[in-house]
Length: 234
Image (tube, rainbow, N blue to C red; front, side, top):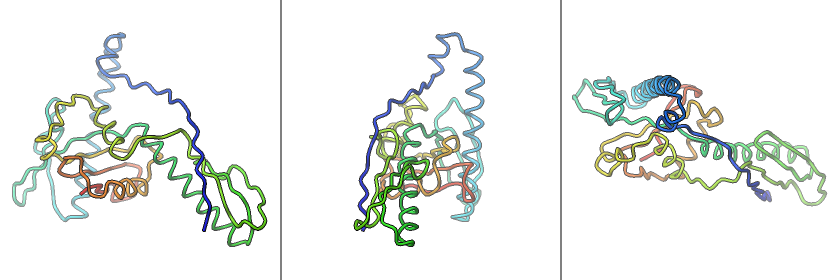
């Protein structure tokens, strides 16, 4: 049995998310317009990944029947087979997702390194970060043990991670209980390149079917191999 002791380092995050209203106040109207257009392109790419994954996993063909960034939801999809509608809202993962992925990457790297040292019959203490093994200290008689250095201190649970993504989208009035109950929430992790499909699968396990009031929760990423989407809940 391995003896893995986590060490958390409290590192202050210096990240600035400039909203459209804030940017306008500092005279960046043109940049805000460009950013809005770029964000919409990412949303369109995310809904296409969702549609393709539903086709692959459920053999259901969906078509976009409404696409209006000024309205809720972002997209309304329809199944030609029965005419049923699916409301889809796209949100983007934020930096807490990077922290979750970094912590889990350090765990996976530790486990891989520990297997190699055990296979060679070496007894060592490993210090592992998301970047790899940082130090190896001989430890005769104690087997393979280790210290995990996951990186910046993290408090975000999967539910918090999703809440942060919703907050970044803005306009919380969109997400009342009635709206959530009809809406499939798609979390786009494409710009969070450290989030792998395995990380999304672990978020799914942590949620244990909890949809946070939404009809379904999905995660998509352009960086993954097909299918580029995973159902998080239910």
